[in-house]
Image (cartoon, rainbow, N blue to C red; front, side):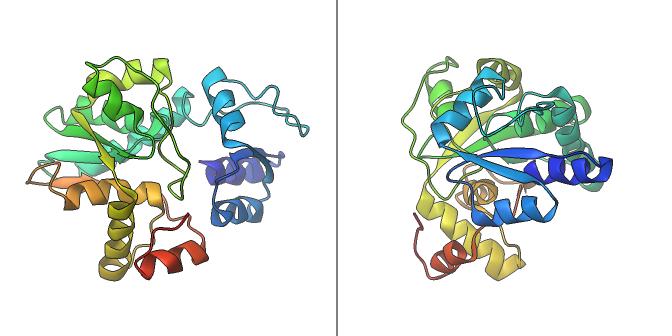
Length: 245
């Protein structure tokens, strides 16, 4: 998302300031800076508060300009929806699609498109068990509630709460949710790299971990591997069989 905004700003010849939480990987930040984006790092709690408030205000550091919300903007969700359309163009009879959940924008876009063109396909959300508010909401009869959250190397998914409007949008579109351990996440990252030669960041590996466990059932199961931004030092730890901080 950040790299896409930075790329488009460069193409348009306008400056882009990317506000990131302090647990964002150095690989992500370096990619944004290569595209000309200016990075502003803030504590995770302050970043999430801005996401919840749908505003860039009170972030300081000279942040100003047109605010592109990473989750709520409908054009962003529409762009995500093209993934669902491409899946149906490329594959027949998709039984299930597994999607990492950060704030709900990716899920809402993909699931909305699939509901229109392949309504029999089930959509499942995948979260780290260090912060799985969708899983908690489903267990609570669909009512959102705060959960404990611990930031980890899975920096693109998981949180302590849901954005109410995004949950209401996504809730009727999904069939369930899976909370994935960090150990299973790193195991999936190793499988992706060693067998498929795909470097996946933590959030991107969550769907693969869920699929490998059999949680989504049999049949044609599609995993959205949503990014490959991971620091080399952390990747080395994971390949060695460890769970990084």
